[in-house]
Image 1 (cartoon, rainbow, N blue to C red):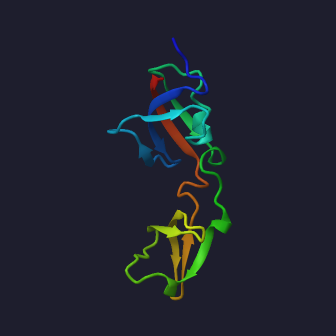
Image 2: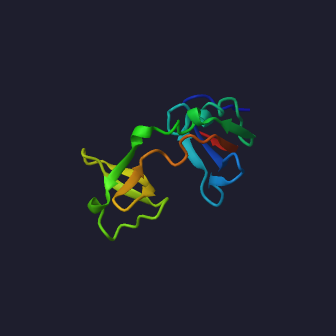
Length: 142
């Protein structure tokens, strides 16, 4: 039976959970996730778990934060004067916003603190610092 090797295009179904069992993402009800193994298209800790699997194989993969979205970077948090944010922008904690960098690139940020004078925005990935568990099923190779 054919086994996955780096460079293969594969399709997997997956369910990603946090240490408390809460699901943060799943392909259930959607097409399988397709990517090239070893190409850096998915998080490293999941990528390295695929070689050697055959179609129909299932496995549970524990991915430490350093092999997922890394540790939170304190430099990715920035306080912005509240007066610089238009009134129509919601500032509820946890709200995700798109901001533009000085270089003109779009960047996702999360509102993490709001005071009378400042809004603190966090550009870390929402799952930074979290250990993740993936239940995966290899659907296809090639």
